[in-house]
Image (cartoon, rainbow, N blue to C red; front, side):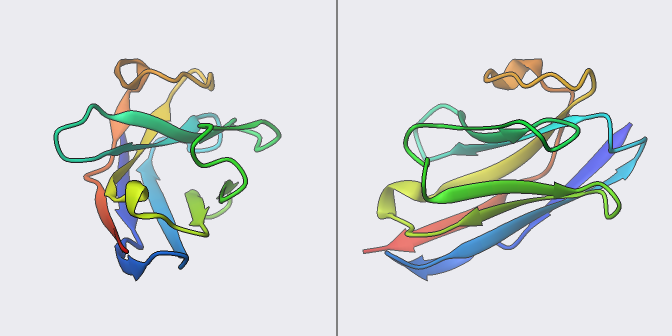
Length: 124
């Protein structure tokens, strides 16, 4: 079992920045692919960014490329999402998810473990 706890969400004005953290505990963190998803009210959960277990490979949704950066520190069992140039359309609950085979998937159903989510609200 892996437990995930997100933090760092909040209210920010458009153009501002936030850094989300996802701390993992339980089984070995290093072998897991880690992904951030988000879900806005009335919408489906969508892929935001992912990072391979080694950190070598990263992938981003087109809507966040150039603005968001995902990273991980396996020694601290933590994955981060640095969000810059935030837009009102980024408002959502952000979730981190872990995939035990180390493979990056874009579909939420492929993920084994989820955090409880952290709210990000961007005002215009």
